[in-house]
Length: 361
Ligand code: C2E
Ligand code: SIN
Ligand code: SIN
Ligand code: FE
Ligand code: FE
Image 1: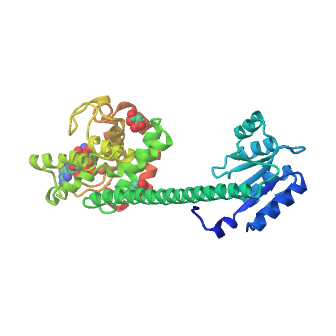
Image 2: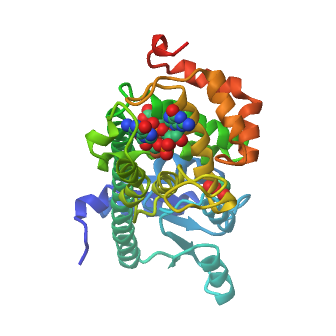
């Protein structure tokens, strides 16, 4: 029983490679009379490789003893293509010495057909190998096709997830900040500072993607507190401080690099170098570098921006506060990197301004 129809098998391309024209003619006659319609007869073994690339045969019948390039050499050339769909090669031979046959098997041959040819034996083998190869090719193509589909789908999901994450970051920010530009500025400053701290381009890119979520926990803070125009009462301040832990919880339990970093930043962006920050009061290098980087970018941008409870500070005042807090609020080394090239950070700020006229004098 065969998996494929007679017609399907008869349409498959078969190579016959033999330097003796008599043999070529004989095989042509046998195969054609049995219904095969796509035979490629090759008398010069030097032509096999090119013909292979052009025709993609489903079966190769190969003579071993040929002048110039012999059958072994042809098999070597074909093996060198590393084609996962290399068709079976059947050797046409008058030899019966075991040594000789083993060597051919090692070189990649799948079977032998003895000369002089027995018509029935020849057709039986051709048909068996063709059937197997066509089945193999079909499975293989379906697998490739599935892999491509799965790959596409995975990329779509990743992009969708990233987009949802960005929107959530904006949503959290839009409540107390009208343009959403804060997270754009803040994330670009984070990536720049990470670069200065020696992070790889890939890690910096992850930083750019993850830091917009630093205040995502503000989603859990009531309007009455978040949007309060003035100073917070002590109990309100206790509630407000929960935003770091809420953010940490929202981003829990996902093991993508992006979410892991985002969670680290959300949880640690209000820790301070001297241990006086929240939620955990971590100190110095106990605070993940990502959190220490985010603290500088977040405070610099928050200070120089309008909030419901405050006006925008001037750059000079913000720089002064950061300098004063070197080694207190902020990692001293990161502070130096930040202040050394403050122009670049101001440039980012200016590129994504909210309302310049609201800067106080
Ligand atoms: P935010 O407005 O995004 O500010 C982020 C951080 O920038 C603040 O974290 C603080 O370290 C720094 N910062 C912002 N404005 C000032 C300022 O005028 N002076 C000083 N010294 N630092 C400033 P912090 O303090 O942990 O606050 C976290 C969040 O709590 C703030 O995020 C804001 O949403 C809210 N918040 C803080 N203070 C008040 C307030 O007095 N009133 C209201 N309504 N919300 C406040
Ligand atoms: C945004 O959501 O556009 C800010 C962060 C980024 O530039 O990827
Ligand atoms: C990273 O997160 O891979 C950079 C270095 C660090 O946070 O320790
Ligand atoms: Fe925050
Ligand atoms: Fe922020």
